[in-house]
Image 1 (tube, helix red, strand yellow):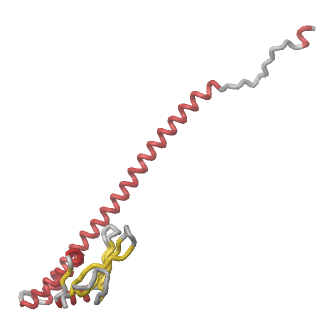
Image 2: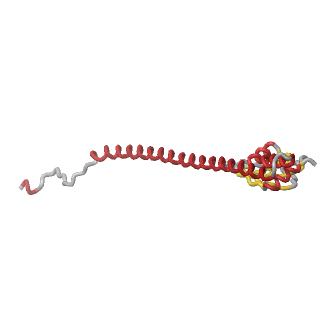
Length: 175
């Protein structure tokens, strides 16, 4: 039985959510599977991947073949790197201590890249909000200036005097 590590699609029409599973190669995409290894959510930025590292590594060492997309996900999480290093141990090229040292170094560099990307996205969002606020402020000032110009023209024409205006001569002046 050839086993594959692949994705099972879940979620709504335009918001896919995937389970990473080990299944028989002959089983349908969303059909029967042997074991669920984790989840993959491409709707977040960066995509969120939650995977059982030890179980997935065990299946890879047993010979389970990942599909192209699953291979990319496993590579991103470092599972293929760890498998490669462990195969070096089997051949006698590396020791377990060297494998752990190389893998932790690689994992640290990868984490720094991910944190850098998240920080860059946060600062880009903050800069976008600041720029949007500047545009809105300029538009509000332009509107205020337009309203001030209209009210300045209206005020001189609407003068009202407090003295009563009489056109008829008073009775005291004629007598």
